Length: 349
Image (tube, rainbow, N blue to C red; front, side, top):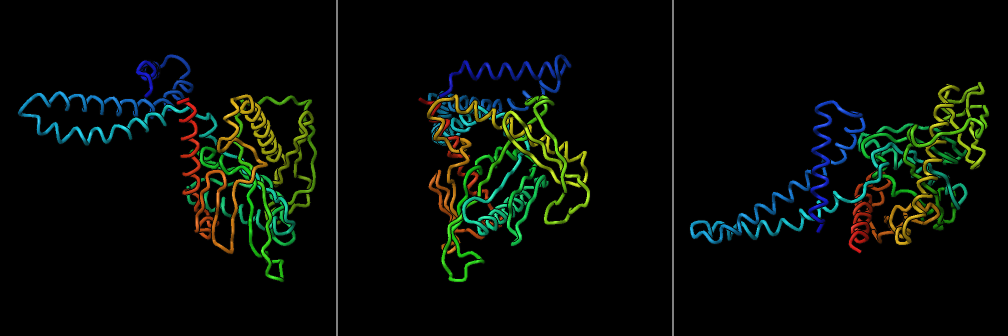
């Protein structure tokens, strides 16, 4: 179990933050952010300590003939609750990804499979749109390029809401589909793929871009589904020369496009920095779910059998229609639980 000294340090820090906020000393915004992050941890510490006190009091009552019977009834129930409280406390104490609460930039591109891969990329886009809608998240297109058959060449979107990146970060990777394409006359099952990347949106303090490192070009705009086709050269393309990263935005306003494209560029550079830091950590981290390896095949959607399999955690669900309709909570919850279990195992080593 976690050393009591560490729990006491966390509790004392929380009390200090509470007092500092009450008397208005220091940077209130910074204090409030740390206070909010520590509050659920302190609540779990308090609950665990109270349960231990209740158990100690019940055990002390065993020596009192008048209270012994009551104590014998309470002790098993209290002991049964203790492992759950300890586990909840351990989860609360796990290192937090500071990007978890941020909005996310979703990028979807077809992989192997030609027209069918582009159509599948469109299916994935609608899956994430429906999931975002079900959770009350905002969904805003940044770049949208369709194929002639209605598939997707490339999509970049911003998803905003509560804990968006925390829940979607495990979606990065290669998504494979097995089905009979609409373009297949012989009824043969084809395998194709699309790549998904989910990046935490960068904040201004994360990345500073030198104006000399970028090249900005304007071009003809054509937005989502042809809805924003525009005869003016309003679309903006920004190239970050040192890394070769290219970002485009195709809304109607050229000024707005510059803002959007710069934000996406910062997000991609921030993601590069996060990946660099990840690679410097322990070798055991490489096998962890959500490590960010976007060349990894993470999931298969088998339409003839109506199943979805996540290969990282060997989870198979025979509810493909529901999954494609945006019902992703079961698989996302399982991925989060697996990630937490791996972190707990690492802490115990």
